[in-house]
Length: 149
Image 1 (cartoon, helix red, strand yellow):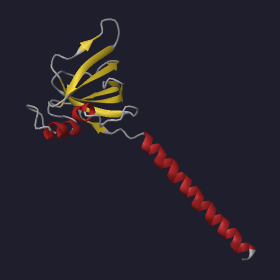
Image 2 (cartoon, one colour; image 1 turned 180 degrees about the vertical axis):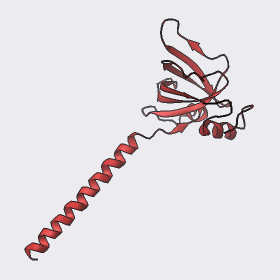
Image 3 (cartoon, helix red, strand yellow; image 1 turned 90 degrees about the vertical axis):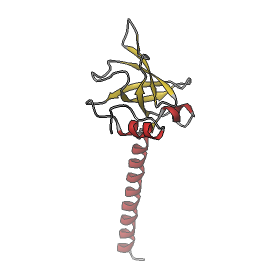
Image 4 (tube, helix red, strand yellow; image 1 turned 60 degrees about the vertical axis):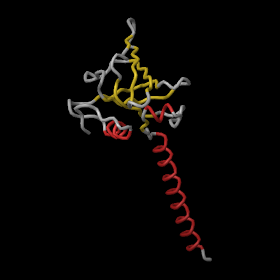
């Protein structure tokens, strides 16, 4: 093999190796940022990972909202009408957050199966519910009263 062909071969190999490394790094970054959605039934059955940030959603159970008197800590229960999961959040809840309405919370599960949320998302109008929540409720056989997804 002459010197010119050898040089071209090394250049091609370097480009292929660089592209492979770039793809591997991109896939690794995407893997870490995926937030999978879990219903209260899936969380209660142990399907949700405990060490990974997840999205959980359902209907906020009426009468379950508990606010701390001296801090921004809030605790409430979300249900898909088959199972329930407790969500703990520190911060100001969205203006549209209400009991009896659909929400999605992002956070990590603790050892007791409660979701420690770092973000709570509420519906943005009277007729909207997050698609994941609508699907979960439909799968459990419970469609909320006046909501459609």
